Amino acid sequence: MGQKILLAEDEMGIAEVVSDYLIRDQYQVVLASDGLEALQKFDQTIDLVLLDINLPKLSGWEVCQEMRRVSKVPIIVLTARQPSQDELRGFELGADDYIRKPFDPKVLIARIARFLTRNQDQRIIESGDIRLDTGSFSLYKGQEKLELTAIQIDILEVLIGNQGSVISRQSLIDQAYRGDQFADIFDRTIDAHIKNIRKVLGDDSKHPRYIETIRGKGYRWVKPDD
Image 1 (cartoon, rainbow, N blue to C red):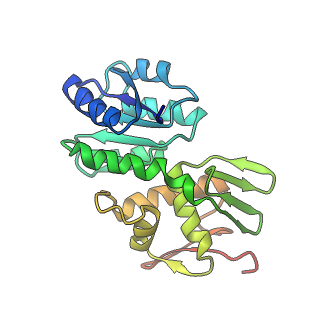
Image 2 (cartoon, rainbow, N blue to C red):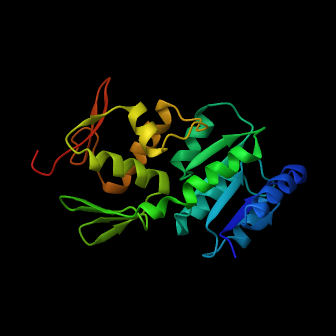
């Protein structure tokens, strides 16, 4: 059986079309038509979540936040909204990606595959007391295991892999999103992810130990001996 995807979508026409494409590509599909049902059907067997924002009973934002309390499974938000603070809010709550309606189901399938095939490039990166396992999406600070989303792990991989060098926001987009030509990513998206990563690391942006902001340029991972 294929990997399991939870599709939380209350518009049945969209749910049926997306579900058909997913099944055709050998994915298992679990359907939920409202926020409460999405949480009820979410368990450790789910490999990825497609989450509509405008769900009845519980909004997509609330569902995302609750899922992130217990899991770092990739979450792709489906939204009819234009780029705005709402989408940044999604990233702050732990979403990995978003795609706007109306969308081409083939594009959505490609975006899903990008997340579900990442662990094929497993490697371990270390810098000072930080250890990153890109295959299992695991992050350790000393002996403490920290929780980041899949895309945040990818951003951190780029920064640590180029430690000491300034990485522009556009370069982070290109590398972390792996050249995805369909990714609707902008500078503020990267800033939101960096803010979350700093929070998890316990890093102070004014006196950074790990991630330094280079005004007008981008971000730099601070070498342990800097």
